[in-house]
Length: 225
Image (cartoon, rainbow, N blue to C red; front, side):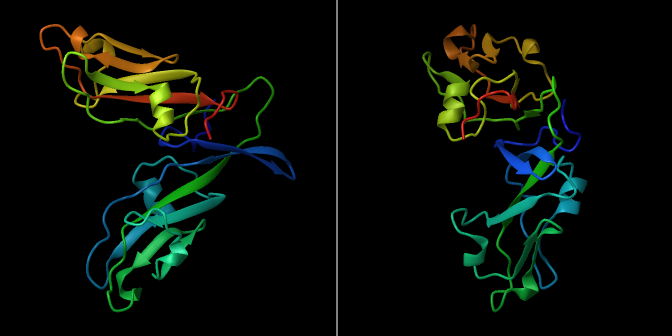
C-alpha cells in the first residue's frame, strides 16, 4: 500500500530505516525538486517552499522530517558554502530573496529535496514507491542501435532503484498518453529486464521511439544504495 503523501514523484529512492522511540519508521527522500528559474528584480527570488511545491502537484509530505537544499549551478557545494542568505528548513522549505544577496542582488537557481516518514510496516503489508519516469537519453541510430533503459543500465547510471522491482511501466516520450501496446513497436518492457528497444525490429522505419520507464520498488526489494 502506498502512503498517501508518497505517490510517484521520486527519481532517486533513498530508502532508509530509522529506529524511533515508538518503533521502526521508514524514511524516503524525494528527488531534487526545482519549480523553475528565480524571478528577477529586487522583490524577486527563488521560492521552493513546501506549500508551493505541494500546490504545484508534487506529492510530498506537508511536514517533512528533514530537507536538503543546493544550487543547481553548484550541486557539489553545501548551501553554507554559497555565500547567499537563504532559508532552508523543514518548516518552510527553501526561500531566497534577491534583495538579501548583497551587491549582486540575485539568487542562484535552487533545488530542494525532502525526507518523509511512512507509517510503521505492519505484518503482511509492503510499503511500495514508484520512481519518477527515467530516461537515459535519445535512442542510438543505425540497425544495431535502439533504446536501452534496462534495470542494470539505470543502476549503473547512478539512479538509486531496486535491482528487482515489483513492477515497471514504459512509455514513449513523444506519446506519454498512449499505452506501450498502442505504439506498434516491438519492445521488451518487464521487471526482469527493464526496457529494451532494437531499431532492427521496428519494421520499415527501423527506428525506436525515445522511451521512458518507471519502476515500483517495495521495502522487501533489494536497493542499490
